[in-house]
Length: 188
Picture 1 (cartoon, rainbow, N blue to C red):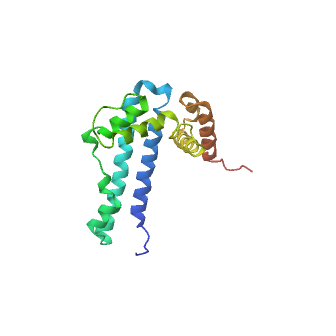
Picture 2: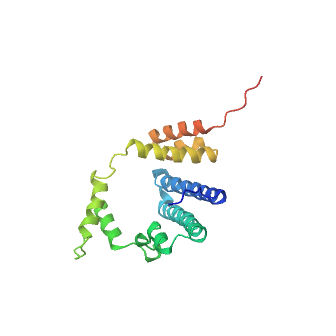
Picture 3: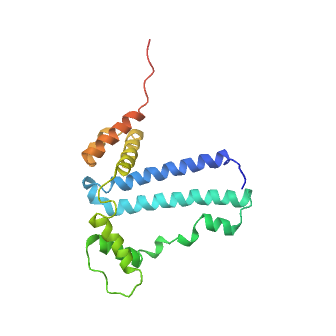
């Protein structure tokens, strides 16, 4: 395998796109908070799809570079892009999504003969009953605080953190934002 660095213009584009994704992900988290509940359905879907589309754009740029300038085969690109995992949002929610949400919300398992229904249903139950991320772990809380703190600092809205976040996350996000504050030059 060749050992070449990513071209600087491509690197800059990828950094810009990933920054946009992070901002959209922060908005997804923000709109899950109770204080913003009036618009959560629309805004979480819009921002999640914005993040997904932007990461797709980054993937396609990298793939185009690999194909055009490094002669990576289409089979190799398809493997790296994990195209077998790709699902279209245009098709809407799949049965697996419906089974999973039914498990999360404690609805009865649909009486269908789908072979994977019970597996997806149990994943949903895991989210609801404490098997999967019931208690936010420190890494997840830190990630959320970093996203919120970064956004608050960039938008100069540090004081707004207390308006929509749980107090412990708001406090961590505020500390992150304070660390990102540009210090004033010392006067002599």
